[in-house]
Length: 122
Image (cartoon, rainbow, N blue to C red):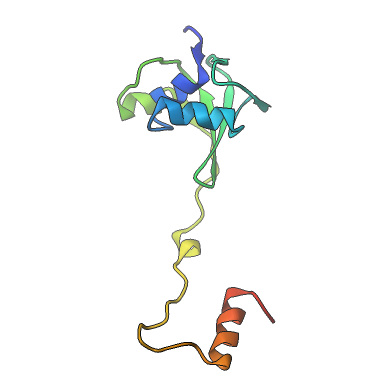
């Protein structure tokens, strides 16, 4: 298979929605090929490892096939082997507690409890 630009490959296998988003991520240093930061025009070939930092999660992808045009999701998944660590459980992303509307300002005791809950004070 022929070599393809890294920004085009990331867009074609649906890691990013647009090619410009992929290019911006590469320029920002969020994409590395075999541990090295690259430019958007860097060529990627099968067998290389691509690390992508996106949405507070690291994706570790091994290139299985190169495509330059955007393909469907089932074909896109066959173009790489995903070695990424699993996502953390959803419970870790729970929303912080919210005070009821109309209760006014918290008292000093309530504020201390909120600070303790948020880990801001002892």
